[in-house]
Image (cartoon, rainbow, N blue to C red; front, top):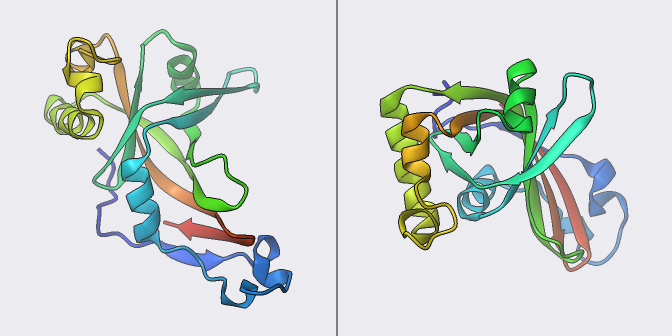
Length: 185
């Protein structure tokens, strides 16, 4: 599991070049960097994430995944033969994003880091519990979309990865006031 713990606080900075503070308008003078605690709440609550990996030939691969934030890392899974698993075996660098589709509200998040395969059974059990707590009946109910995912991890039918952020970005929108936050770890 990643070395970063849940109490590690990143360096936070507002990038005025991409924030409303650079473009004066009512309310823009109050633009501040988003707090990492807000990003953590959103990472914990988000149901769908987009994983971006790089193929061995340099082409990008982007696909939706479910993920759970736990103990300083974002955990996601894939089948061992799927494109994202093959890409990560070649190059673990990736970006995981989540957010909304509104132009006037929300905070979109990008987590950049290196995906590390999780194979320790005790660590897997902790992450399985985090998945089950987050996705509930989608994972635990026989009618659920991802029913049996915990057993798939245990048997190796699905591989589990952890991404501890090296850098994360928050792109905020609040009624025409925009912010661009960078968190460095």
